[in-house]
Length: 145
Image 1: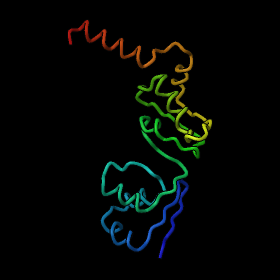
Image 2 (image 1 turned 60 degrees about the vertical axis):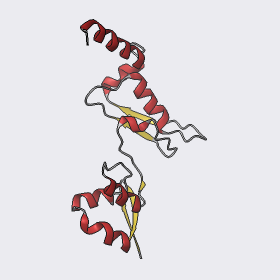
Image 3 (image 1 turned 90 degrees about the vertical axis):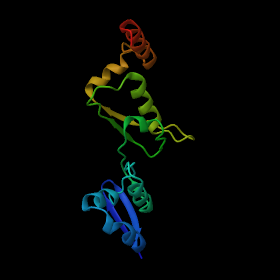
Image 4 (image 1 turned 180 degrees about the horizontal axis):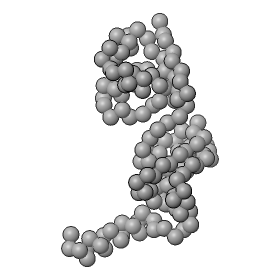
């Protein structure tokens, strides 16, 4: 027998084997997350195994900026980038927006929702990643590190 759970985040399908193997070993909060339909790295092999076994079919995805480079999911319509630590530069931002929705066969345009301070990345006035690394290198040389 199979059980399907659907949430605003996605859906999963589990069976009695999944219930016996995982349900009674996980906290209620973790079960809610695993059965939410999200596909994410749980940072724990056992939890990742439980998530994979539930066959998540996400409607939305939450991922760190570094994961956006390989998302390559043509079903992606919207990308929201929240940079509360203000570390995202122009190269990272543009790559994340450009590569999130591509599929390898077709390159789809996504709607980008970004923090207001990230609009500066499109002025052409910010240093690129290479220029920023050159500055850090010169600073390290001048300070003797």
